[in-house]
Length: 70
Image (tube, rainbow, N blue to C red; front, top):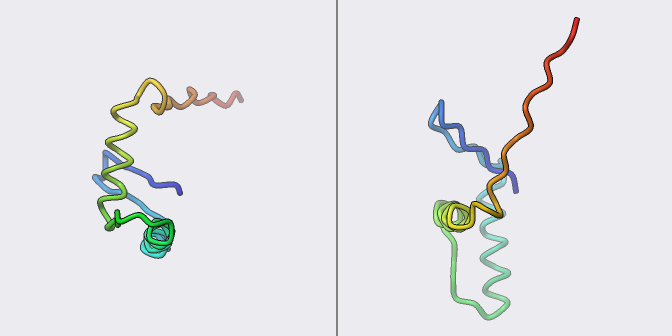
């Protein structure tokens, strides 16, 4: 699932069906015998915290844009 953090606009853009996806994840956890349930923001926070704790593996720097030649 692609989530976009825009630090200039101070926005987080999630898919239009983000709430449905979180409900599906929670259902999978429940059916698997787990008790954890995500909220709208706890899913984002957990993933952000994990990636920031493991930046050597999960921080991806984009390629430098190629300048179009005339």
